[in-house]
Image 1 (cartoon, rainbow, N blue to C red):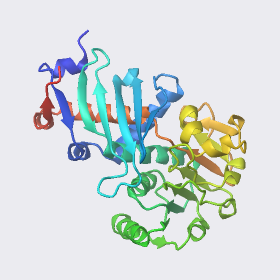
Image 2: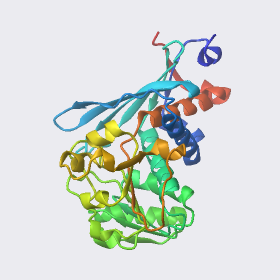
Image 3: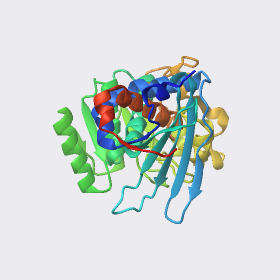
Image 4: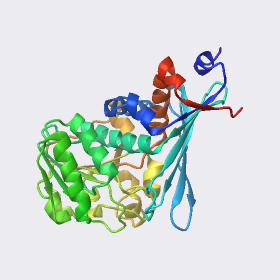
Length: 339
């Protein structure tokens, strides 16, 4: 059988797809639908996804993330760096190479930085959907960078009842910029907190997107019923939450191998403060209904997000199909002959 791609691309060209082209045809709602489907397939055991491979440099690292989702006919690999000290360049940059699973042909080389930001936010919002209280009103953001902004966008789609936003960032200009943008875009009151404690008080949802290695969210700051999306820890030694929070929370991870290596749980695990038996579920199990999400209104829940290749490849594949299926859009894409 001739592959779908070869039926629409008889010239055998590889497409170069950039951020502006992606933004035109794929919005946050598209990411939410696609990423939730990817987690469903993951929970059903219908994907191939080896753990991330890390290359460590003096000033950062490179992660290589392959995945194959047969039912979506989506396969490829994302290469993404983390260089937190970058000044002239973003701290995180990524490219995604899509592969035709029927032939191995390189379908597209895509900007992965924007996709990474959006799919990470979508995963966080999906965790909010299943784990946060439906009556959540106060959303708190620890860190005011790009990821905090996309997390806010996705979270408000999932929990439209949110009526107050609070933000803390050690850089005053960053938190004021976040607040101004959020007020203008969503019309909601935004409080710039002067400390982590001040921000966390009375929160219903806390979203952490910081690079810290010493926990900033203390157990005494967290009230019953709070849901926490722990997004920032993505390498060994990183942690944002007081381990005492994890000891008393329902912990949901995205993937055991990745979370235990570099997610929020990596340090408490290595110190024996929690064990694998303390991990309630992965998000795929929750999405498929194999395990329920929140049990009660006063339960504290934590989602440890490390970012999965299935998120990148599923989103990239759907973006590619939308672009290629539109003759006008496809005609304006840059192409190269690699084979």
